[in-house]
Image 1: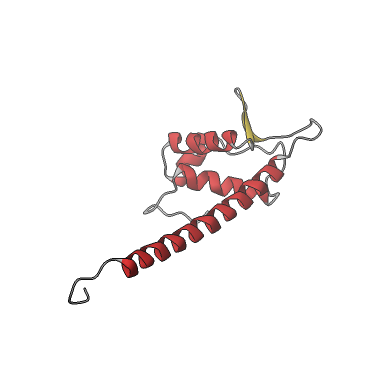
Image 2: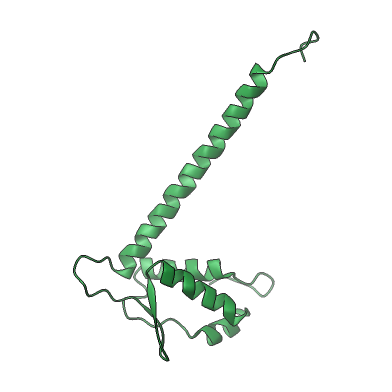
Length: 127
């Protein structure tokens, strides 16, 4: 985590950080994530920010909360279900593909704008 007091992390940043740790196998199944209050204090953010990050990770299917115990990397025991690491790796690949498609769409939009400029009717002065 390379966050500073001037630019504290958002919930999205925190979720991305833990998503990466899970994808890389640095947080294996059944690993406990830090308590939201202590992590918030360490990062200099509101507890709700960390809770929001953990909510994102739960929505991704990467972690589960255990009442009175904490938040843990999901441990999949049922056959055929992807592990939290596989899910995180899949999400990372999807994010890469989305970035690529977004870049292509921006390039296409620029080309269309250029073609529209070229095909715009000109007045007698060529303008």
